[in-house]
Image (cartoon, rainbow, N blue to C red; front, top):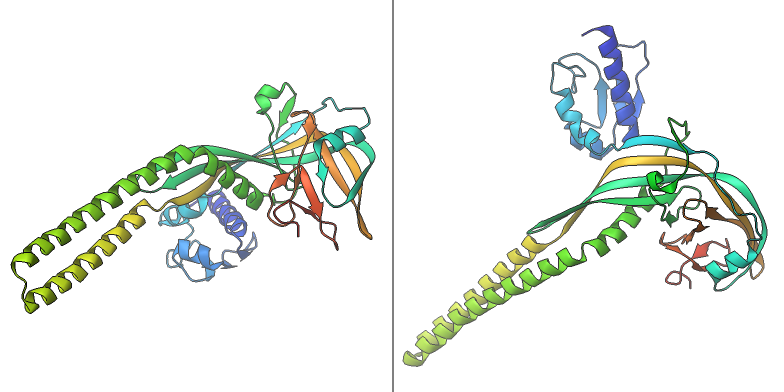
Length: 339
């Protein structure tokens, strides 16, 4: 292989393993390196957690195009979303006093919240696109979008940028790793639970039908034994009848268990695309007083949705406009998590 190909493979391997949580030591000028892998990555690559990195054919993972290197790293690449960075230029921001708007939008359950100021700011939003799959006796799939405000962790509902009527520039440089994947997964699962409702109802109806058919069949077997028992009512026949009934019940239980396993739903979310959007917003600075504790908090008005965004529960991650606050850290809590 040419030196250029070797260097590109080295760089690709180091970045891929690091994004999967590995510690990689492979200087650019060195022919070999070393990686400490998480157990899940080691299992995917079929190697030990301490992995020598080299292009040699006898290496545990030969990093060259002649070996099966690309096939072995494919499971790691498949879950790597494509990332696009976008920047929205100028946008209209409200100039009126936001105290009344905040009072209309939010319900504060156990604290006093006072708007102090509202000023222009920029916030990064992460629009995650997942392939959502429910796999059972049948399969349901859709592409699910979840957009998270990276500053608050709250799920927000923004229009597609093509429909928003704003100027969007590509190739924006955004620093740091996105830390919103967990929040996006939670939001996508909530969305999938709603969107797949009709599919799940059909599965449950089929499961109930198949369970009823099994129960009817094995009950018919038991009734047949009972009729034969009337004609042969000896003690030996009675014990044989009880033994056959136990066998039938055990077989029914086994068949029902197989049926439940067949109709069990397995949910999979595969990240496809992450759009990192740098967007102008109006940051509404609020003072929150909970008993003797206080904190400053920001609420954001977004020019794309033209509304105040919800806040995120610090415990379960749900986005809501009705919040209480904890006593010590004055952390926002939804109604379900507030003590």
